[in-house]
Image 1 (cartoon, helix red, strand yellow):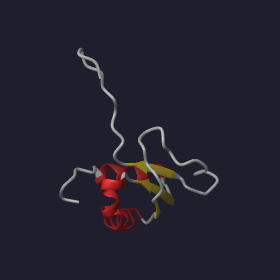
Image 2: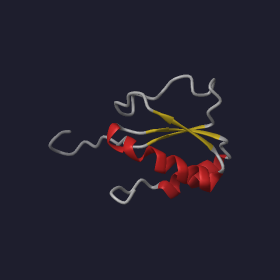
Image 3: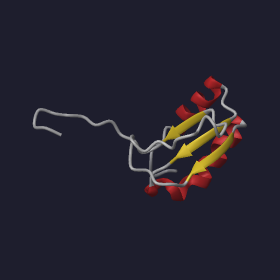
Length: 90
């Protein structure tokens, strides 16, 4: 996890804040090799059950559906960036 600032502590704080018992983690393809480390760290520090979403991930519009029905309390999406428009355009 040294190559990226995943703000893992921020995610862990949010899990604790909302008292999530089951957390789904959605990662872009480039971060999927780190999935086991991310899952282990979150589980160890929060006690939450972590499910890894290994399906497609095309950005903010590709949120998995049916999460509440599946008993997931919180979805953490890494790799989704805000779009910013500058004077020259996108």
